[in-house]
Length: 254
Image (cartoon, rainbow, N blue to C red; front, side, top):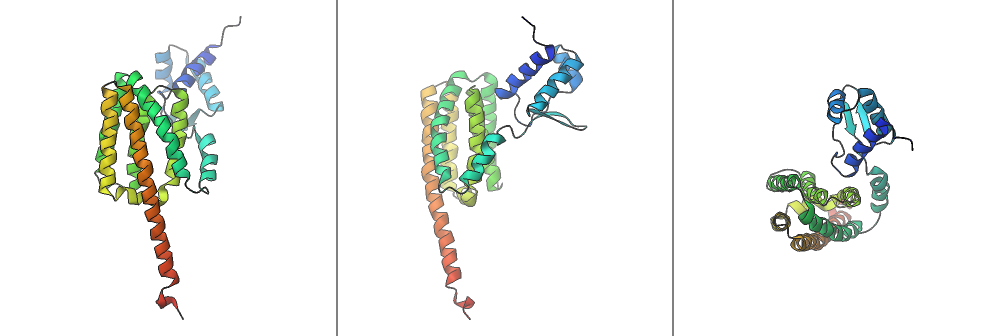
């Protein structure tokens, strides 16, 4: 049986790290000399492995800037879906229904499988999310801090399919709620509740209580679903009122 080429073995190692999220989209690889020393391989073999992964679209080199994991790993899934969903009424709620079930699974597995490094990352992302939510940051930045927290939980579930699917779902959600995003974060009650709910997820994971982690995650997404329905209704009423005012503004009549 023919022995695999060394470059193929190196490429496979790096590919596994990309697949399981150890090397996240946008992550920069160590310099070639450092990486070859750490892997215990020659630089030509490493260079060949990197070229193989670049040809697959997993790595990209920037002139004078090193080699990076491709940023848009999920674009082949999310971009067509985003284009489709933008024209679909209430697509965000279909997305939230899927998230509720999958994030329940993620929280359950995170409570069971999270390493100490995972747990620390969840704590850090939660702390960061609280800081951003309580600041005067823009609504999109707040949404992304929230998403980063959820992603830390999903990464800690150590399920490759779930990780990459949920990254794409996140992009879909961002692209479908932008029309009334400001209204979310202008409502203190809503922000306070989601922060409390996130704390419940964190505490259950830290206590290694899978059932509580799953239930808290699902309750949080159920609350988000109902709240977003209300916000969407308010946004539509506001748009209709504005349109009505425009149509019947006496000042516009000749």
